[in-house]
Image (cartoon, rainbow, N blue to C red; front, side, top):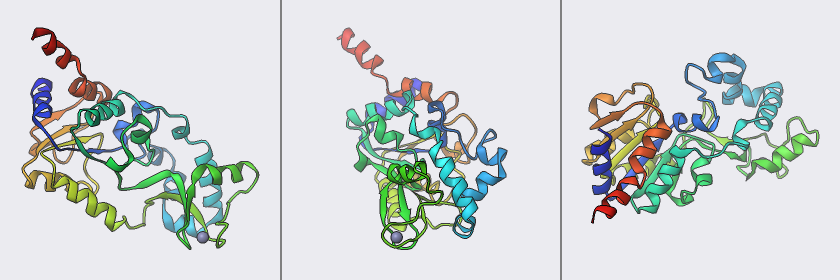
Length: 257
Ligand SMILES: [Zn+2]
């Protein structure tokens, strides 16, 4: 099956990739929703990610800041799965990369920021919940390190939060619109590390399908869209993506010429 999908990638011109938490677990960033996820293990973690608790309770915010300080994402490195998607862009195949992840590891790996559509925002920025000011997360974390337990917006005194979509918050319509637009322009749609259960993002698969794109799913567990995919590739995401995109075959065919 890997060989067939490699051929489809060779033929494709506008590949749209959708990534979820599964692509980052090999970089040491836990999947919050999975069976080993933080939310499953710690109900307080779920409270911290709920906008209503976050806005209402300073104690929840103080804990959230401590959590951000110690996030594994700050030292996480892109893994071979991320690098395979960079290789796809270098081959001029990548039309867009829609991600549910907030870790920016795609950009760290080397994908162009303008290709990446972050439907759940980014943890590397803060946003003021009152005035909308945005700033680098590390500046706010410096204030926490210096002793502020719940740093407020320096412009208006409002509550700061990571610039991500928490539970209870609306997605950004322009971002979702752009994700659906590029999905409709795909000739090949690759869903990676997501169980495709969260809407409207999962609907990008339907949009791509409707536009005639081949659908390939790479995920360790079954997904909601396996039955409509042209290929489903289980197993290690890092290994499968590397096998799909690695230049080994190009080298081999060149040496045969
Ligand atoms: Zn503000």
